[in-house]
Length: 103
Image 1: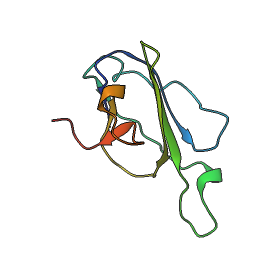
Image 2: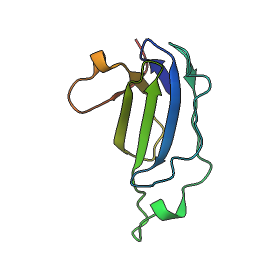
Image 3: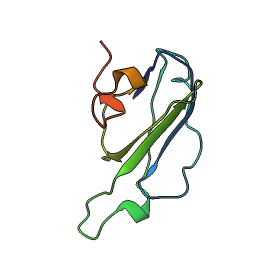
C-alpha cells in the first residue's frame, strides 16, 4: 500500500527493478492527491530479479511531485509493506520514503 504524505499532488510513481532503464508504466492513481492511497501489486516476479539461489533482487520506488520534487528509494525488497511517500522536509538521512501506516 502506498500513502501520499508529501502534502502535494504526486504526478509520477514508478516501481521497477533497480538498475533497469525501463521504469514501466506510471503507477500513480489513488495516491495522486495528498493523503491518497493505493495498492501496487505484482502478480509475478520478473525473471531478471530471481537470483540463482532463489532470492529476489531489489526494486526502486521513485516519485515526482507537482512542484518537481523527485525522490527514489533504490533498495526496496520484494515484500508486503505499507509505504509513505514523504516530502523533502520530512526526509531524514538518505531515506526518501517512510515504512509503516500513517499516523
